[in-house]
Length: 410
Image (spheres, rainbow, N blue to C red):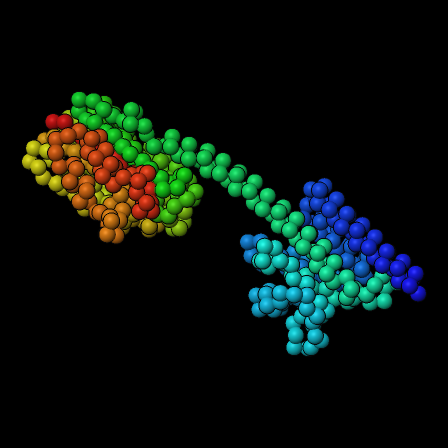
């Protein structure tokens, strides 16, 4: 009798050792999650004669990763949060019609670093398997085996997630570089005896939803604009890239600004179907007539400073934002004549809504303070940026910040 028990213990030890070696070998072979679960399932069902296996695993959320030998109606009402999380040890499930777990016999929790990683439910246990001790005597071994498998699967998930994040990071870096190409470099902006244009652009994330531009439309006409798309991230950046392409294709020296805004609105509506919108300030200046015509489509009003008379003017809104409505009901173009040295500073709300040390929005006070002089507008912008410690020293920034300065010499 003692010899028989000794032989059984030896068989059991060999079985456990071989099982662990097989699973370890499978992990070292870099098998997929599905292949590891297949090995695990085969071991429990064929070698231990377990009829039902259910595994819930936590990754980003709880999910069912294995259902073997079970009909869906057996487990469809099981909730990890309400039915399993309370179990910290191996638990026998009492038979009860009210118990959602009654189709199973045992709950085997799997913990990693004191956090619940998985729950294994087994049922239809064959307690009389020849040459094997009853499954109840294997429970701690099954728990150990489950722990090894679940940690391996979690490592696979984390590795794949790191690869995905790295790929996304590279895509964002490429998108950021491409988007920066859409924002004109200061050396390429018009800077001559008639005018001086300069800008500043800082996306809150790697890519942003702001855009500004300044374009020669003819020998006598210059056009400039600044825009801000609602929302942030990749979708906002893609929409703004599309908007920039449309703006450059449509903005000519002779197109009425009302028609330009109408066409832009049509194209944005087709692109986003009302999910996003764009605020826009767009203007055209003629060097001969010195007339500046503009439309402010729900954008922050630029700060216009007349250096000789020392007056500040901020254009009112002309119409709703681009993409807010299928058709813009009223578009009002405004016209002013530039008769003295004039500076126009356009900006997005990332600047005006920047909180000060007391949590209040800075508004246009900082802009008015630093633009109200005869210094060149690039120096004014530099003072604004420096005073607000943009970008590196200000931890209160929460949005993209773009500034376009245009200075006209008369």
